[in-house]
Image (cartoon, rainbow, N blue to C red; front, side, top):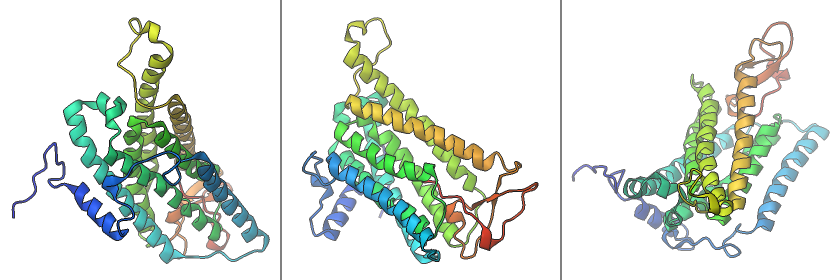
Length: 334
């Protein structure tokens, strides 16, 4: 049997979508068939604002309510290291699967029609990609479990972590109902980052330390810079087409970009806030190690410290390890 040769039409040498379609169809008893999926607002589950808002509100009630209860009644922290590992390897696998399937769809599209077509043409909103966008959207609710683990382990809940989870679910919803062809850019970049991030958390939960953990945050920042470059470009094209049609001959303009203005504004706003928050996080954690409130790497019994970024606050004249019994662990990045 000849070895599969990658081409522009089959970047991995074989057609993966039909395999994925058959596996998912059989696994769900044909209740969910990817090749027949249609996203219809008001009909598809989680396609209207009320249930999305309810899920996000429930998330915040559970995590902050649970955090309060655990502290109020002095409930002992739960280790749950085995579940941590299953959760992280599961999300690593899921993220990699969606990423590979998305790349398979995008490479031939960009090769045949160009990058502008792929990010702005309404025809770039294909059935296969929309199915993958929707599955990625559903995983954002699964990722709420990240924070539940922090609560039962009684780790500190930071604004960055809790805001990021809720806002990302909302962002994915606005882009789906807004039919934004550019969605593949932030989604594929985010999936790539999540493959690395959740794999790192899995290794950390296994007690395996790696040298590249700082690159997890760096990759996240690079992701948002690239996201915003594309999203600002698309939003500019949409804004000019919508509001400045009389001036198209005198201002820079490439063509209309598919999607609604609400989707464009929400994408710009949420992604911009991520970039600011993650840069602040990076500076706070990695660039102030010599300050009086230094963050240092600290191995905690059970190997799960890295699962929450392995950082503890240290006060005093010099940076010295905090005893395990008194360590306050910095929350994991979302």
